[in-house]
Structure formats: structure tokens, C-alpha cells
Length: 376
Ligand SMILES: *Cc1c(COP(=O)(O)O)cnc(C)c1O
Image 1: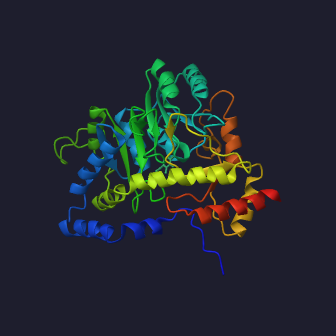
Image 2: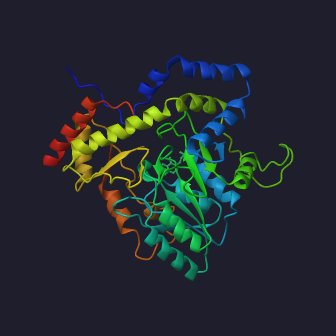
């Protein structure tokens, strides 16, 4: 008997579960034909805002564009410093750099793997010392875990800065009784297929309680439109979400709470199975992760990943090179003292298979393989 292949993220299981409802939702859009800004887009925005417990959601073409549109709406530009953690995907810093602002890389804390408020405070002082205006912080909810927003907001507030949550991996997560979306001035989420709430292509949204901000982003995603699309009141982009993707997301939202609960159970099971084998993700005090990824720390990560691969266990590394070490970003400033925790984590983190349809048997196989690989 050959062991079944293990999926890193099993989108086919979700597809089977949604079955004909998904086909019907797609067929409805093909029939009504309003492919751009059709009724499903507004319906999705209402649902997303309600789910996140915020006043407004503005759907857009990707998580990257959600970050970009928000910084555009805040008129971030040349001379401005935008503070980002060093351990993240390129989009987090890309948006600021594209607008001519300077991304300033901060360290993360070894325990939370998210933006370190102390590194942020020192980075702000050093940016000011070279004449940059501190304008915004983009905190990242890495692997689905909400960043330390109370501490980050406190630092940001003393400098009159905005806080944007890069919530690409954390839709559904919660901190202090508030969902992601209501933890910062705005949150940018992604519907890339592998994210906790994924569509079948690219998509994203900005979540916020700031109605003016939502209105500006709505205009910016449609070429800076005013009263109608041939009235251009600002310079924008083509950043809309397709109606088809909105229809797909509306169906996926009907099972999202159930999937989120499954992710919690699966993460807890990994915690039990893997105790003592690796450094496990730290618990979130007063909240929970959306568990986009379950990443452990290992001394000998690359060797162990290769051993797991030989045994049919897919893994990933998020992220192997911290952003301030990437060719496109290494000339931007880093917080005084650099980002040593981000560098250590980039060497040690290994993401294990994680999705709501992972069975206890498969998790046991992953744990057994990891135990053998760690053993020698
Ligand atoms: C996926 C991701 C993004 C970008 O989202 P897209 O929808 O692919 O543009 C941004 N930031 C982080 C942390 C991500 O994981």
C-alpha cells in the first residue's frame, strides 16, 4: 500500500465540499454578465465588513493593491518613511517604495515573529535623524498571527503615524476581542488562493472604520473617479475585484467560520504531536491566529526539510531571505542594530502542511516523519 500524497494546502477538498453551489454562483455571474463591479462585489463588501466588525470593506484586485491603495489614499510619497518588519513577503515594502517613500526595515520579536515595537521606536528616531518624515507603519500578521497592535499603535500615535495591518494571511484572526480589520487604522487582506479566505485568482480588500478613507480607496481603484468614471478627480489605478471572484468568495464565506475552527483544532493537534521536537509557534495571549501557516523552528532546517520531502511531506519556508537582504531592498534603511531576530527566523522556520481538511492520521504521519528527521 502506498501512502496517500499529502497536500501542503488542499484546495481540492474545499472544492469538493462546496460542490455545485460554487458552480451555480459562477453560472449566475456568467448569466447576468456584469463582470466588472457587478452586484456580488457590493454584497461581498458588506459581508466582509460585517464579519470583520468594521464599517467598510473595499474589495480590490490583490492584497498588494490593498496595501498600495491605502498608502496612496494617505498620500504617502517622497520624503516619507514607512516602517515595515524585515520578515515578510515583498508586497509589504513594495507599496511604499513604488510611491517614492522609503521603507524602513524593523526587526521582529523572536517569540511572536511579528513587528517588534521597540525596534520600531528606534527606527523612527533614526529615520527622523536623516530627515525622513515618519508617516505610516505596516505591521504584518505573519502566518496568520495578529501583530502586537496595542503596542504598535501606542508608538505610532506619539508620532502621528497611521497603522496599516498587512492582514494578507490573517483574515478571521482576533486580538483583544476584535477581529482583524478593526485592529489598526486599516487592514489590507488578500484572497490569493492559498490564504485563509482565498478565491480562484487574485483578489484583496481593505477593511476600515474610516469612511473617508474607504471612499478615497473606492475612487483610487477605479482610476480616481469622481461622480462617474469619466470624471477623474485624482490619479488612480485599475484595482477592482472581478465579479466572478466576489461570487466565489461569497460561497467560501459560508464555510469560513467552520474552516477557521478546524484550523484551530489542527494547530492545537500539531502543538501536542510536536512538543519537544521543535520550537513551536507561541500562543497568542488574548486572541487567536488565522493559521494561514503552521511554522516550527529547527536548528537544521534545510536538512530536515529535505528528509521530509523524501518521505512525501511537502513543506515551505516563509521566508528564506528577510526582505532587507533582498537585492531590490537592501539599500533601504534598517533599524539601528539591524534585524537579527528576523535573520535567525529566516534560517530556522519551516512551514508544515496546514489547511482545514488535514486529518489526524496525516498529522501523525507528519509528526512521525519529523521525529525521524530530527533524530538523525
Ligand atoms: C500574500 C501576501 C501579500 C500579497 O497578497 P497578494 O494578494 O498576493 O497581492 C502581502 N503580504 C503578505 C504578508 C502576504 O502573505
